[in-house]
Image (cartoon, rainbow, N blue to C red; front, side, top):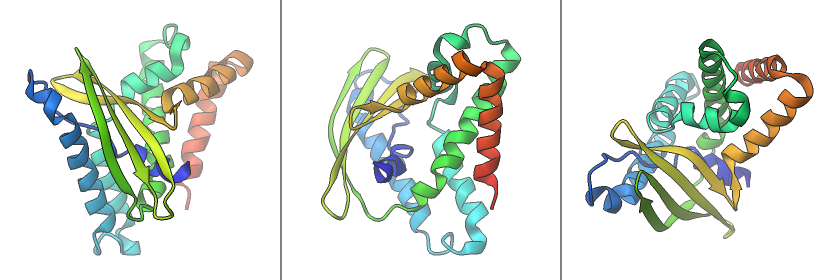
Length: 201
């Protein structure tokens, strides 16, 4: 499952919202972005230890260009989002983005020629879904579904589903328990602490 998560953050689409063409290009755009991430992690120059900051930044730039962190953060916080102030929402989005980027940067860098097979795509109005599977070298397979919505003329990822488990739903359950049991400030504190732990050498 962890190896599947390594690829989840980079398997998505960035497509212009054109009628007809958008339906045909969703999977193509997913593949294009995945290829770019594979290029980054496979670049001999960027693999050098002293190049880690540049490599990580390149990965973050690629990921953030197509992940709708605001939508993901809002869906993950669910009902607790409604009572947050604009300042609290802005802070939460930033912490959530940092959590995702830092948590999975190392896993993405651990990519070892896993094969990605795109199975099916569907578009329903402003929403789309791309179904695929990841085949690891040992032969195991994991299903990956990417849920996207049009925003600002582009297809943006707002959730990924691994073996039937939604990333957003998983975070929603964790966040909801913390807020209900300890309060919202406790959740923010935990996110800050987690981000600092990940950043630490």
